[in-house]
Image (cartoon, rainbow, N blue to C red; front, side, top):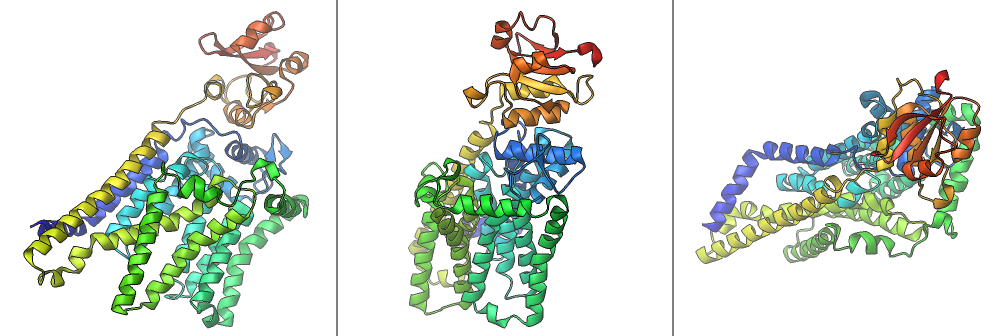
Length: 521
């Protein structure tokens, strides 16, 4: 009875698979876009990318990026991620939602693409993958799916390059897709894309597919890789020659991979394992255990049945390379940041979903053999399958709930950022003027200077030109200008500011926007 009921549920799932798949896609979309603009803008890569993209539009220059209208040699990434943010600004206006829209969309597309790819193994695996993408707490909460930087687009190109790699044997044209996606990944995240080339090269070598490629295919592959890179490089060269490319090599590649503790991000080899994959607060440790158990079970079955499948071995090698190459590669590099290992998480999701999908389908796959089993054995088997299904649902739902509470319910704005957004728009009389700030910053020694997230909000809200120097520089300013100041410092400098106009804010807000030369506005 238990086994028959379980098989009946499997058949029901098969019949309405697309309904379940659509529901899983909508759930992932909810995790991507719900409260997308609530979380405060991060002051580093996210704000920097936002400023770069905004100023590209203002400068009408879509290849060279600037920060505060000075050529930016700190953010040494090519242009694709900025174009994604620009698309968000064009669709939704200059807003935090527009800043993050393309990242959220790229993550959603990545999840759906993986779900459709997993369908080749089982429909159960297809839906499970989408559940794991929803339970993916770290990339949802920091520096990827819901952040306005390069990583989500990069992950999408990386993932689809890997999925195309698995299909090269079926059709060599997928090699050109891999080449194009590598090129786009490089134009998004720079040298990080080298992991795609390493995985792809090793996979083609292990499967011996490397030696079956014809000269024409090699030529088309090299063209798919080089054409976008040469177009971008030629366009960039017209702006500042070899300067940007040299900086990419010297700083973004060599400085970050050298033995020096560049930017204070040096950690031991075990950093990614300890903080991500062995962390009991996240789902990855459990999925890693499922994958290890699945590999051991697969080896035992292959040896006992002597049914070695070349295709299964090749695909297993592909998933191992996809996980191990970036994991070990970025572990060896001394400069480490959590999001460097995010590409390792996708093969973990896919492999775990495949193993669990095979497990959940056992009663259907073994239905003919099951007729020969004693009734009590069938009932015991059915009971075990119900427990397995309940375990899968509980594991996924538990971490999806944790992800929801952390990412969506736990999203918190910043009072000063929200004040900047509310205080001005591009239609106000004082928009486009010089702006000064006198409020707490991330570095107490830099009061009077703009943090990157403050500057981003000031630019997109009032098209302000942000100037450092604080209240003293504001008081000495000859041109009409504005000053953002917190309530405490406003009281401290009330005498000096008595002739200034309060343009926005008050005691209830905790901040004031003041103007000098208001009559000139």
